[in-house]
Image (cartoon, rainbow, N blue to C red; front, side, top):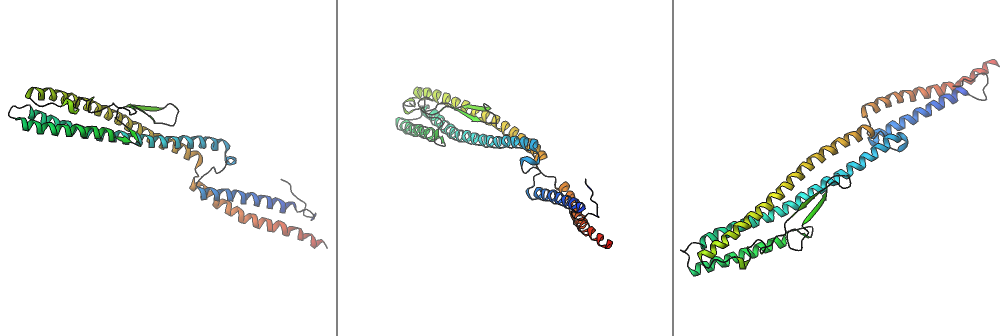
Length: 278
């Protein structure tokens, strides 16, 4: 630091030093105030280039994970739609089993068995309708032309996916189509009962597989939520401002700002002492 000779008044070195320090104080004070205003310690790359680089990478990962978390939610919603439809079909099959057991009893006459057959046909048609109407975002989940395998992006990295396979289902391949439901005699009703029991087992297995997939997605959801929190914590330690520290620095800089003004005023007045020589 240069020190001027007060007997040389053409260049006031003391005033220039005081002004430079005053400007530095103002610059640091502005930076601290910006940090308090934004809540961030790093507001641009020049504040901390390495920290800025790391924070941006962490932010990109966090945003990717947040979308993956939403993807898992969508996947669970799709499986819930499938589960709801299969639950309704299970209820229908149980009703069909009940009516078939009734028809297998020789206390039933021709008219009664005809009425039961009509009811079974209506229930079979409802199974067809439910399976055909089970869609998610325009994608059919169970029909013969449906996409049977679904892949979900469940994390921020390429290839970190989870696949679910749903069965192709219809009243015919469940053997509960109208032509399969014969109850004209106790013997035929018994054969129909066996087909319905097989259909119930099939639907129960599909529901169990869906439940397993939902449980795995729930575990992934919990793990991803924890990871997002941890990465946010890491980013915050690098990028976010410590308000207590910044406020402490501002108080110090405000004092320096006031003393800087006083020092500059004194330095400007100092050359006037030369007049006493005259």
